[in-house]
Image 1 (tube, rainbow, N blue to C red):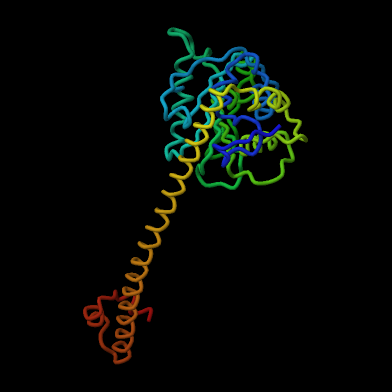
Image 2 (tube, rainbow, N blue to C red):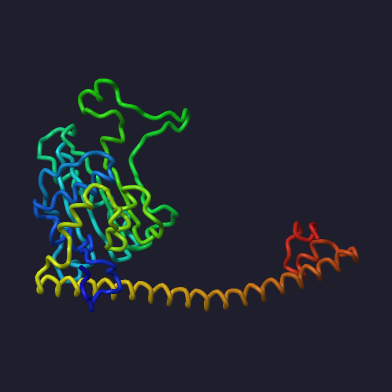
Length: 311
């Protein structure tokens, strides 16, 4: 049953709750872990079972952060840490923010006096609703590898290290990063991950979607299950998102307008300078044809002797 929505219609195409709101309000409930587990299982391509949710200091609760950023720190069945963030605001230093978040987890979740072999694996999953960097894909994966600068070979673990750490490659010891640029997805979903990205982008879950977690999302993330107070808060959240997107669009439009204006001025100046340079070249060419010494031509026109010889 569709809701007769009056607020937030710009972002809502179905009767399902947006994922960023669900993470903040609903997915922290153990009864709803299956939704988040399904998403992570699809993204990481391995069965993920959340052992517990941990609180992150960056998971702020002020009015701006309620719609701007959402952090969730989970621990899977192998004791690995998974930091999930939804970011609606265009943050130019977001790459550095990702690095800071993983570095902080690495140092926070090791007890004083423990050896480095106790450092825990960290996954940083970033769902961004803005244009981050320059790239054509919608999902990016980053990991750490060491390659020889002379031989080009990959630095590998010794058999003892593989047995001790229970991993096969060096990169498995380091944090891994996933970036989902969901606003850039504008095609028919053809894989489980694309079905999730479609939902993250539109808030809609097609009947044909079968990706892990989406069946549970259909059952548990419906608007008609929310109280009036929850709906009011949710609509305010959508209004804030719309305002934020409008601000970003306005800033971009103003930036483009300023750029065009500056470009016109720069273009006129470049044209004037190019015209003056062409006049100097023509004068130098005429003097050269009269066998005037090159050093004299250079003094008169300001062109270098090499430039004059090339005429």
